Amino acid sequence: MSGQRLFKELAIVLIVALLLLYFILAAQFESLTQPFIVLLEIPIDIAGALLLVKLWGGTINIITMIGLIVMSGVIINDSILKVDTINNLRKEGMGLKEAIYTGGSRRLKPIVMVAMASLVSTAPILFSSGIGSELQRPMALALIGGMSLGTFVSLFFIPLAYWYIYRKSDKILYIRSSVNRN
Image (cartoon, rainbow, N blue to C red; front, top):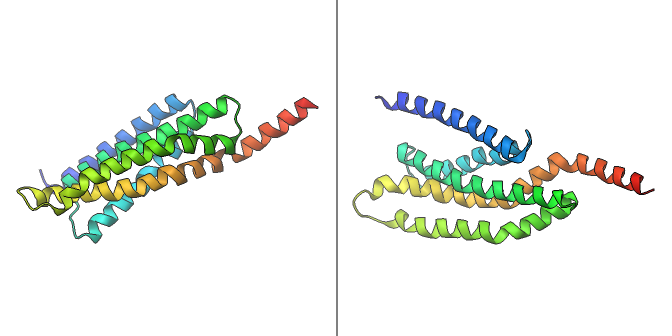
């Protein structure tokens, strides 16, 4: 099987996987917009990972793709938990901004701990010189680049995107509740 054909098949599998992930997230969040908030992170993180691979002089190959898949799974999990925490706080009656701040502070430590554990455990692969190290280095670069950028995106961009999408509906709810009180 040629390399180009393999990449085409991998691209098709990736598209199908993203569609399935969207539908699963839509069912989980009971929303059609919230999965986009979470999935918006994937292209940003992949771009960061591929940039680091290229800057370090690595090659983009199947091993790099495996690193991207692993990185995407961890980062997406962080974002899902963050959005779910914000949703739960809003269901409890908390306002949009307060739910975002509280959800962010509750998820900060777990997100940073997972990122640091991943980065620290992957870093030695970059500097190893044993058998197979040339094959493992692009995967480590993809993981480190994606996890570094992905942690930043999970902590700051995901809440910002959530606020941007729901800011108008929160104002409408606030106006309705103040009218009902009077």
